[in-house]
Length: 190
Ligand SMILES: C[S@@+](CC[C@H](N)C(=O)[O-])C[C@H]1O[C@@H](n2cnc3c(N)ncnc32)[C@H](O)[C@@H]1O
Image (cartoon, rainbow, N blue to C red):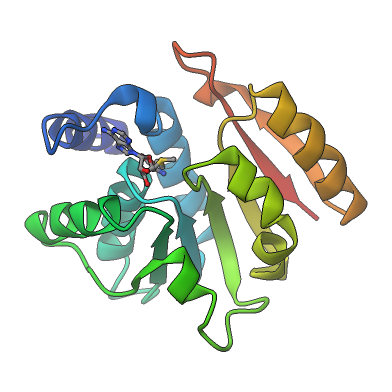
């Protein structure tokens, strides 16, 4: 089955679980983008900030590449209720369920600075993302790639965009992720 079809199947499964909603999860288009980006970059260390469908997609890719690349995925969330829900979904799918952290606990880990080759930034509140922007950027390796959701939100974009540029990033819109809520993702690269 083509990979996009597998992601579509995974998305349908995800939406049938635990009161999951399209509006509080990344879109199918974004899931497909994430999977293809991982295929392209083949990152060793991945940080998935904001658990949900992204977690299932990233850990599916991880599972498919255990033997060759042995990738490590860390998932964080601000919400103590939703983190175990995502973890249980990952377990039900038979995917790797290591390294799930509340963001506050992840912040206490050592050796997370400049560790990650690929990051997906989608923590629950955009306010939190803006407040934690220095911390978020500090997790990325110098030549790492960061993907950010919700770029349609002008109050978020207008703070994060100039900040990322001031840190030497180029921000690239990924229009293929545009969904029916007008949401889309960007990639920040150096
Ligand atoms: C910002 S979203 C992150 C989405 C995730 N990256 C994904 O790919 O689906 C995650 C947060 O949305 C909230 N959330 C998720 N599902 C929800 C639901 N059905 N109702 C209300 N809030 C929800 C929780 O606070 C959760 O921590």
